[in-house]
Image (tube, rainbow, N blue to C red):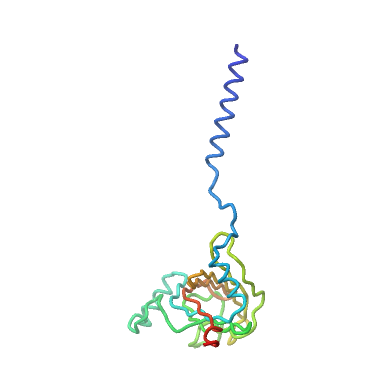
Length: 196
């Protein structure tokens, strides 16, 4: 009788453990690279067309020093704010990447001469390791590449651009000499302008 009770107890305990472990499983998409039809069409268009990303918002790594600089510059008196700065871009024309981006953040190494006023990010060349792929978890496209600064040839940048089918863009830029910075913007195709 005791042996039979132990067997029932063991079976119930095993079933309970299986039920517990299966219900605690993390949620995960079954097919991470499944894109919507709209994003698939957008990916194909992005692979075959020139484009420009118009930057609307700069998101520097927040620090007390960065905020102090914004306050000292009086950037909010120009109609811009510490994070909203218009007129900057990244473009891809026939495989050549050009960018004029502001940089607000802290440098880890000297990137120029003393008294240098322009600390922006300037790129104008064919990038290294240029790839366009579907995002592994989101219904979006990832463009990534590396490039050097035109004005400071010793500084390397790694761009990671997340593009959605609605043409909203998030750019993450890491540098060999500076802290990480992000940009938000919108993408427009340049080939459509050429055809019209």
